[in-house]
Length: 383
Ligand code: MRU
Image (tube, rainbow, N blue to C red; front, top):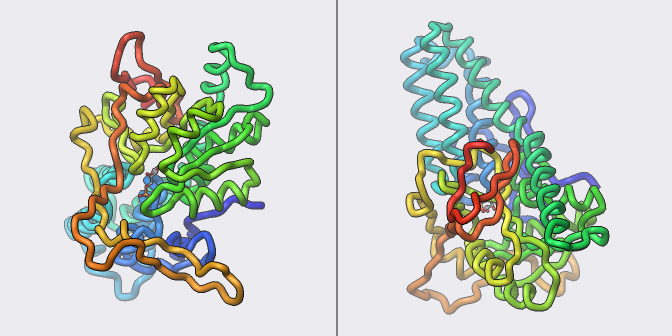
């Protein structure tokens, strides 16, 4: 079956699959304004660091494409100063939609650079808008190709590592992942899930294990659907079962995506990633981060400087799904699993895994490991 997709775009038409309704209902939502794009990201109708950057960039392309077609032309096309003020404002607005994933900031900075370079070159406003439209589309289009590259780097690195340690990869490796990092979280193929797909495509995967990833359940709702669609042999575990899995099964690696990687390799990713890393270290299981270069934030020295998004407390009290047993028409419901009015809820969306616990970081440029005896990474060869 064809992989799932998170975004469809052509000319000024933009649609996303509403991830709040997956896996039971596939509904495409039209995005017709910057406000709708902002809302879709904030409310997690679309999520995953690369996918939210792609949607933000494409919504800017859509906005400017419509502006160029509009009669009369909008005021912001009347002068370079007007255009600069307008585009700066919309990029700043989109940037506020979610705080942890740096890809969003990388995309808005990239568009700001195109804007500023073209203004310095004294291009006319329509040409500048065209350049921004092309750049917005490029942010989304480049994602798939680089995902395949980083997936291959990471997959080959793991196979080599297992062999170096005297392991046998002929029957394939078992890997655990957290959250959802596949085609729904990116423009296609995926990062950590891309590595799993690569291993499967090369007949080197035995099984992919994945955590449910409470409270939003990206694992049981989205990763489960992606692995099922791709017919990749897989096993779901509850978040509480990682230690048991490592005690009773031969797991060759933990592989995760990232929302932001600090200069020293400290990595912010979905809540629960740190738990898996601590347990992996205890069991001497390699812990691999797979992410695009745009996820590396060289302005952030270490993980303590990464802003961690706190989601609304209510989200930790609710589970989305369909009524079970699901006879008759499927009905989407949210079920409350706590007493109503519960106070005192801790709901960070991400945690930071220290570089010390990470064995390897892969980007589209290659794989970095720490120097012997070092507790932090030098990421310069892979960024
Ligand atoms: O809150 P989410 O669902 O946007 O969090 C997603 C993750 O943490 C992913 O692991 C990360 O963005 C990498 S996606 C390729």
